[in-house]
Length: 126
Image 1 (cartoon, rainbow, N blue to C red):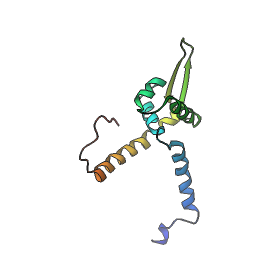
Image 2: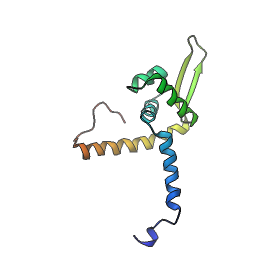
Image 3: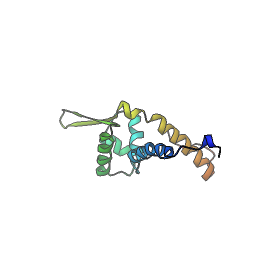
Image 4: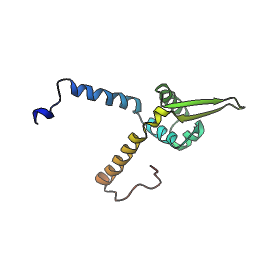
């Protein structure tokens, strides 16, 4: 490797830390599917539960709290009877659109390369 291409001592660690932070916030089986569901519009709890197949209500509640704590999701409670609660992406959360799009593109290409799929999976919207 050329000297000018080498990272300065400690620079590699500085590049790793933000990626580790992002992965910690987005990690797990459910956060990205929840985010993808909410990137398609405002949803009530039951709507998210139906769209994110296999998640329990308890886990969905926990993950939504985590996403809200990290300023990615906004929870709005309406004074109705019964109480209506809606979830939406925050402006900050919307910044994940490009990240999700890049992951989608990479995953689609990976499926083609590794699994020899020659077409885009059905019923998937970007």
